[in-house]
Length: 121
Image (cartoon, rainbow, N blue to C red; front, side, top):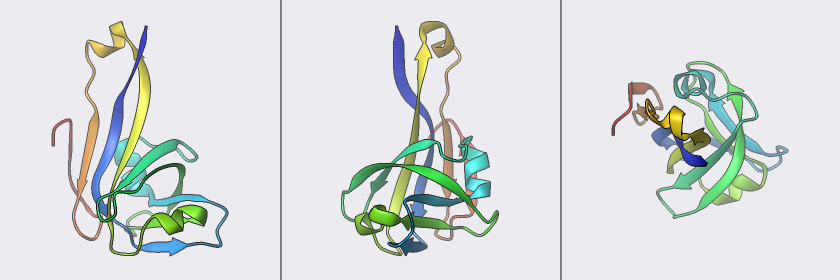
């Protein structure tokens, strides 16, 4: 049996931009993607702490070190610049894989610089 578990999350990132006319997705600082193990076009769930919205999209890399968290396309309607969000990525694990399972938790500051990376909040 496979279980769906949290693989990684970026905790309390700040939305820096929104671009309604872009085709869609979430542009994310490449350093944040690397720290959380996200690949370009990988599916993520975004939860907006300011308004309670929760939506599924995919990530595309932004300039490394820029702090970019940009809501693109229709997702631009799900939040505003300055909103705090949590970005989740889930994966399927079998029972053997779960024996050593630990999610990657990336905590960021108000400018989306990495404060810490670990497996606990």
